[in-house]
Image (cartoon, rainbow, N blue to C red; front, side):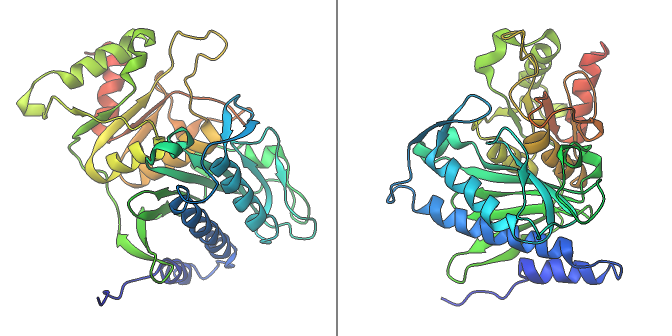
Length: 339
């Protein structure tokens, strides 16, 4: 069967670079290295049911979660690929407690924060999972290893962010601050082709994505807002359909393409961890960057813009309300007592 010719991700990145004569090509090279890592992880994910890579590794990560074998494989794949790329000065992974240095002599001018396999609790049941990444320019002087302060930067200062989602097809979705582009991997040639140019979040939402099993622990604002979305009102397109996969990258991807809002709010369950489950550097910040580039918005449940938060630690948790801009603003109205 013949396949239509399309724009490859490498061609797209190169064409974008030509529009910026001052560009050195380092960001282009960095993204291309990440793409190779994504292809490697995708191939392993697709073989997971046949290879000895399902199940637990027997280790526990910094979050206190049991590490899946594919988690470990993905984490190591990205570290090995990027440590000698020459584009990074330091990395950090959701799976590791401390910063990850690059190979001496290969220090570059960017930083990388990544969640190697978001949604990994769903690996054994064949549900969509993904890799999320965030790129900043280093703050420390050029020429040596970076440090933690290079990584603790606001989301608004990202130079690029995106994710790879591994499902019925493998997709790469990313932005360098000039809109959001989506590419689908053609496994027959091992190349990503532009399939979703200039993605915009639909102005009308269809879905609300939230774990209602936690409803008894929510604060009143979140509870009233979710009930509002479930009420019948033809003029505003309610009720919304409930869709919750439990894999952030999958829930976000569906809402980005089809329209919707995702919530993982703070709750009252644990006084020592009142800020929900999601991590600012590895999940909330890069997805907020994509949401804003696609016309959406992301805030905390107390109204702070995710992209304006200054991280104070590598594994900082944060509540997340993200999706269609109008729906996020309605949440704000509930928070301010206007509804």
